[in-house]
Image (tube, rainbow, N blue to C red; front, side, top):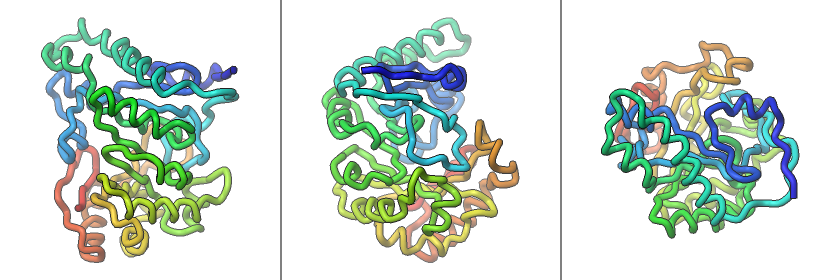
Length: 295
């Protein structure tokens, strides 16, 4: 079993802790802010999780799409032979979180009680980089985290409906930017045309017993007509919809202009129109993250 991580990738993944052969952990901006009592992630505001106790990770440093709006490096693993076991990934991801947290002990203005609690994460966001459904034991990984007292959020691009059908996280996201086959090919730059698979995943979402989310990543000038999403929302029937702005960050700046990033006011107008068309109601918003929650 062998894995090759390019030198370029290691440079691009500064701040990440590589776990085993194909996984990674990174502390997010909002965990750092929360430790200093300077704000919390919109997921805490919307869903009640604690930002400082959230472990952000991926079990798959790889993706089957090259989305034009992705801020992460698109060149991921060069080679992979064999997969790490779920128990190993969970154990080592917690250790990786501890290593990342160790640097906060000498940082000014850190809330010591929160830092102590952060060493006992109880929420995992399986959404860091890459596409998590490419890891073949994702269902077992979720169960392993659950067995350790974690709530589990999984964010997927919906290209592997057979995996979407199998997994039962606490909260399951399908991240949607395209509204048609044509826009899928334009915006997602997939390794093959996955539009049929994405539609299957949306249908599966409607049959799930747990909490489901359709996240709409909005790019100004590309996909901000609310009426284009009505049929897809009806198909998925999610518990929640997140209307969220594309953020002009990282590698996406090489592919999109800064004007493609909507203002929060643009997102709010989109959400209001979507509400009128679908019957979903606006429940909350986070202007700093440019996101509106509908339910």
